[in-house]
Image (tube, rainbow, N blue to C red; front, side, top):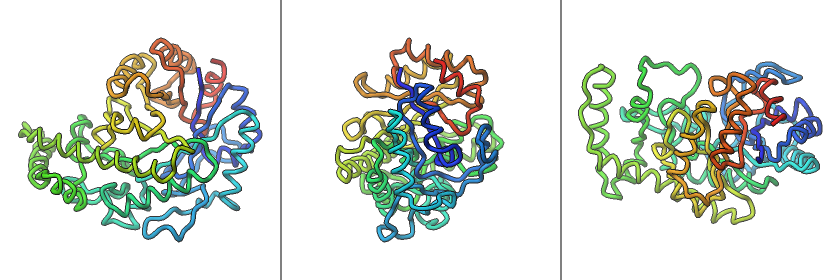
Amino acid sequence: MKKELFIYPWDVMDEGADVLASRLEAWGVESVSLALLYHSGRLLLPHDPTRRVLQHGSSRSYFPFDSKRYGRLHPRKAELLQGDAAEFVGRIVKVFSGYHIRVCAWVVLFHGRRLAADAPELAIENIWGEPSAYSICPSQEEVFDYGLNVLEEVAASGVEEMHLESVDYAGFLHGAHHEMQAYADADTLNSLAGLCFCPACVRNAEREGIDAKKLQSQLKKRAQAFLDLKTMPQVDQELLKQYYSMRCGRISEFYRKLRGRIGEKVKVKPILWMTDGADPRSSGVDPSQLISQTDGMLCLYPRNPEDVPNFVRRIRGMLPEQVPVTAGIRLMAPNTLHPHQVEEYLEQYRKQGIEDVIFYNYGMAPEPFLEAMGKV
């Protein structure tokens, strides 16, 4: 079974490229997905030799970019990155290749506090017309251009493959720090409050003959009933289906334009968030529409080892058998609680015919989980 691993730039900075690459080679890791554009967060690093807690700034970049290509939405060099970004990425690619490990780019594209703060009129807007503080909307042409420019520059940085996170319409629940809400039915809440009705989305809908204002009004009434713990009125399901389809078409267009920009030299794989029954299509990502423009999919994550068969069935329900699938294993609670579960995950995946797995992630996983990964 092929083993891949998400890693952070500070993992390499703090341990040293040779030390880390040597360790990963001994564990049988064949490929790493290195975060070159990452969102904000406070990260606990249980085995980092330099620090235990890292406060990371929003949408900080670790790849070389030309600032003249950008407007309000632009990459910002990470404060952690000392020296030239091109040298940083190039050195990692060179060192890791010496240990027979491919370097791929992990890119968090449209999700970031700073992006929404720099251009609030480009943010996702919920059914109440309130802008998101953490995500920008791909219906906006300026957002589209920003994303394509970023990925064109990442593709030119020397990596073999790009793994794309948050190339979608972010939902309600994936937010910023200290998320607070009082409702147990998170799926219903997310489906109601998470749809974007920014001006660009409404214009796109109207061009396709979709009555976005009618749908928004119906969803607001349904959402208020949900908040008041009352019986919810029905929503026009055909109208809702058309709106979801419009969003999926927009994301598919983004991937078509990206392939036109970068060609076939660098592989492109979307990251599909499928944890706890999440359906990527509800965020505008229809995997079946992306097959011809991408080189496979990263599907993340089953709840636990016992959930793997159902998780793989959901994957197969969205993708034909011939599409290369890399399935995830999250080496963190609540998905992984004991080291022995690592082997159980792999055994379950083997039974389902999955031969390529990616572990999340080196920097935040407890050491015993990493050691278990290295033994299987």
